[in-house]
Image 1 (cartoon, rainbow, N blue to C red):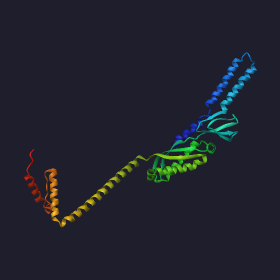
Image 2 (image 1 turned 30 degrees about the horizontal axis):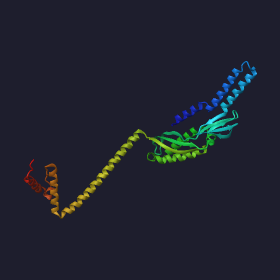
Image 3 (image 1 turned 60 degrees about the vertical axis):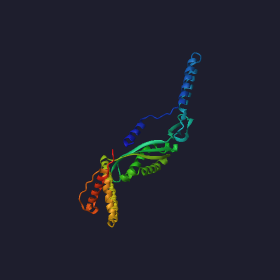
Image 4 (image 1 turned 180 degrees about the horizontal axis):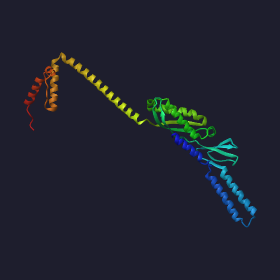
Amino acid sequence: MDSKYMKSAVDKKKSQPADLHISAIAGAMFGICLAIAVIGGLLGDGTFSDPVLGSWVAVWTLLGTYFLYALKVASQWEKAVVLRLGKFHALRGPGVFWIIPIIDSIASWIDHRVMVTPFSAEKTLTKDTVPVDVDAVLFWVVWDAEKAALEVKDYQNAIAWAAQTALRDIIGRMMLADILVGRSAIDEELQRIIDERTTPWGVTVNSVEIRDIVIPQDLEDAMSRQAQAERERQARVILGESEKQIAASFSEASQAYINNPTALHLRAMNMLFEGLKEKGALVIVPSSAIDTMNLGGLSGMVSLAQNNTPKENK
């Protein structure tokens, strides 16, 4: 809920007429009394004098009007704050209750269910001067109807404004990185701050949840490139560690082959055998390693052995 939306909601609420909260029972009683007045007037016409008929109609009309404004019904989740001559008198509801018209008035109907209020902070600067948009939702409940009606004007909008200012304050005290990774911490801090502000109004905050955090597009692209570069760096580090381990293994193997030429030749024969078995041919480039392991002579022996091996009949 941004500031423009909240302002328009307040103006809309001010322009709406006051809710008389007339119950269906009161409307039915008013209709019955009015019907009795009309039917009695029609049936008594010509039988009773005009003053009698006028009194009959007036009494039943006044009685119906009394029912209309004095009989109230509060729903299971509602409490009515009743003022008598401008002073707090009592809390009424849930169920049927009566008030004295003109003397009594209902200041507010308080809903005791858990309420949900969305709010947001737009283009709010973090501690490292990054503008962010943060959307959140507030869950709260009225535990003291008298305080909610008498201690603050329009407690619902007051709670929304308190939540928004608390969110802006927290964003301004945190770095962007802390905001992105610390949603649960922000939720707890928001709940604590808003609850402190709304407790004198008879309101308890059940929870606050951050729904979305939006950062500028160019910064989001830069952070994506940074994350990709970090992943590539980690991949290179892992590859370097693997090469280091392989080099260490080769170093240990070379130490084993220094004083054991027989083992070296056996290893060379195994390499030739594996190469010829998989590919059927092996290209040997002259080098010092070939001379050291005598791969040339060994390859000739292996090829000669393969040629002299009798082929299986297909």
